[in-house]
Structures are given as structure tokens and as C-alpha cells.
Length: 503
Image 1 (cartoon, helix red, strand yellow):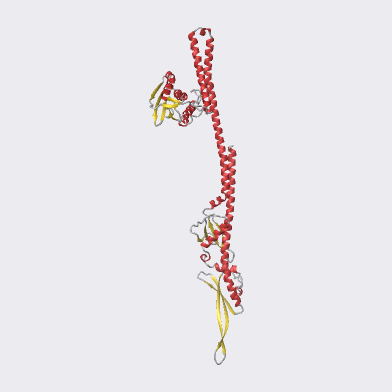
Image 2: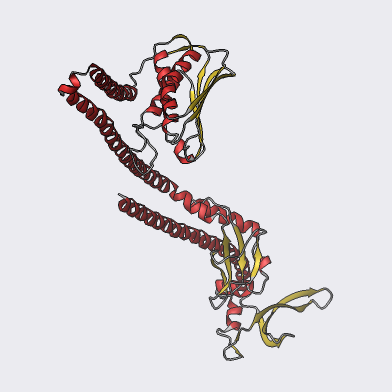
């Protein structure tokens, strides 16, 4: 069972881990799709601005296609040795103006317009020289046939990122895409440089971590990423777990149920084994308890058959009393077993009547006094409870007091010193029985009221008993609505408190 449970739990942990990893991969895929779509939207928005500008420019250039023009170009370097190509287009527009007067003449006026374009030349770091201009810029400039996307990359690439992207707009676009992919989790965005390590722009609570998600945002005219869009998700694991929480919950629930049944089964088996061992000990004790009186009766019966004994009246009376005493002893053992059988089936019924409990205590003390004194022991009485008239079962109450007194005597290995007191505390009548015997360890005190339990003392027969008496005591006291308390210390004796409510 243990190996099966361990194997089952191991497999469950493995599959839960697999489910989490699968959920994590699926979540990452949706996040990347949301990031890609956000980057695409931002790029398209920027490109649309150039479309609008391009359409007007193209229209103007086409209208002026047949005008006279001059295109010049020159290369200049700035203070950082960055080279630029400056293109200038000069367009001439001739206007004929009439001149008033007797000559009936006209004046031809030529207006000159100029438009300029600056192109930054890219330097190849590997060959440490400037790249050649890949296209006929003059031709493209003249007929407005620039590749718009390349032109947008080229032109926008010269702008600072703060002029190209607004963080609030970026957040709103990303949120819309998260909603589209059914992702509900807080996020913080940042724009990283081309090396994906430097931060160009960021939200206030953005934290740079290795597990952050990112995707290219803008590309240069060489189609290389200029910036990266990065997303930091502070509650990523929580979002992943929320998607598979139902699977986790059901799996853990059923695993705990199986584990609980396993533990309960093991506990029941161990308890059953313990009870079985205690019952075996009980049977051994009972056999021993019956064996002695049976042997005594057998010897006494054989003696009575002897003519020398049978002719002596005093001997006959002695052996007859001995047989009677041993028979009474066996009867007491049988009564104890029958009494516990009724207790186990909850068949004990109290026959209550108004009774002075002080009298019951005194009678019980007198019943055992002779046995104690035969061992040179002493019973001290302090019976002074004022309110002692209670509604109790006289028979069972007397039995339990006698049981506790017998235990005090049995577990006093030398001369017994037993003290019996009665007193009232609040609304309880208390019987206090103390001895100076062997006492009990703390771990034993909580078990002594279990049926068949007896403390291990090395030899099971060194102290006679069945482990039933205190279980009977506790049951009867509870039937009276009271309680039993015990104080004990190993080697210093024990004290029992039998508390019965005053009704």
C-alpha cells in the first residue's frame, strides 16, 4: 500500500508539473502573439502617416513632372564624421505678365522653387567604409517612386523613439490584444534598444528580468530590428495557474482523499493489531486467574476424599471454606467479564436512587481494609463532604470505588498507604483516592481507561488484572454525567478524582 501510494503521488506530481509546463507554454504563445500584433499595429500606424504624406507629395510631383528642373547632390560630414547626401531639386515655373503702355508688350517672369532631401549614409563596421548608394536616388526623387516602407524606415529611424511611440497608446493597444487572446493579468511595457539590453522607454513599474517577453518593434532599412517591445508580467505564474486551477484542484482533492483513506486504513490496522494483542494478553491473564482457583479447588476436593481429612470436622470446614472462597473468586472474574461485555454493547442501565454516597465510599473502604492491613498497609479516611445525597446507582458506584481502591492496593509493591477523601467543589461531589505506589509515566496516563490496556511491566502476571476495571470506572462515571481525572508520577504514586455532579 505504501509503495502504491508513493508511486501514485509521484505520478500525480509529474502530470501536474507537465500540465503546468504545457499551460505555461500555451500562455507564453498567446503573450507573444499579443506582443507581435501590438508591434504590427504600431508599425502600421506609423506607416499610414507616411502614406498620407506620400500621397500628397506624389500628386504634387506628378503635376510638376514637365516643369524645368535641376537636381543637385552633395556629400557632407558632421562633427561626428557621419556622412549625409543632400539632394536638392530646383523647379522653374515661367509666368508671362502683360506690360501696360503704348508698346503692347509682356514680361516673362521665371519663378524658382527648391525642395531638399537629406540621406544619412550607413557605415559598414566590418569594412570600415561607407556603403554605396544602392538606388538611383535622383531618378526616384524625380518621379516619386521611393519604396514607401523603406523610406519610412529610413526617415523615422532618424527620429528619437519618444517621437515615434506614445506609452499610453502602446499600453491601450497591448491591452486590446490581451483581451483578444483572453489573457487577464497586470503588465508593464518597455521599449528596448537594438541590443535588447538598454531601455529606451519604460513604464514606471517595469522590472527587467530574464523571463520577460519581447518582440521586434521597428526595423531599419536593412530589415534589422531597431527596437524591441518588452512586456513584464508580475503575476505571470498566477495567470498560468488560474487557467489550470480546476485540474489542479480536482487532482489534489482526489489524491488527498486516497491519502486520507490510506492513513485511516493504516491507523485502523495498527489499532486492530494493538487491540488484538491486548485481547491476547487478556486471555492469558484470564487463563492464569482461573487456573489458580481451579487448582486450589481440585486439591481441596481431593483432600476431602481422604479418610483422615473427612473424619476431622475442622479440616472439612477449612477445605469447604477454601473451595467457597476460590469459587467466589472465579465468580468475581466472570462477573467482571460479563460487566465489560455489557459496557461494550452499551447495555449498562443505571438504576438511580437518592443515596448518601459517603456511605458507599465507607462500605468500599471496609471491603478492602482487611486485604490492605494483611499487607501491613494503612487506609486513611477523610470523609467530610457535606452534600453527599445524590441520585446515583448504588451498585455500580460501589463497584467503581472498589476498583480504584483495589488498583491502589495492587500497584503499591510494599506496604500500601492509601488515602480516601470526599469533598464538594462547586456543584460536584469528589472522591479522591491516593496511593504511594509505583505511579505511571505521562504517556501511560492517557491510555489507562482503554479496554484491555495494561502498562508493560516485564512480566504480564506480576500484577493481576485484565485491563478492564478502569474502562468500567470511566464508563460508569460518564453515565452519571461526571468525569475522572488522574495525577500520577513514576515512582511516587497516583491520585484519582471521581467527580459526580450534584443533582
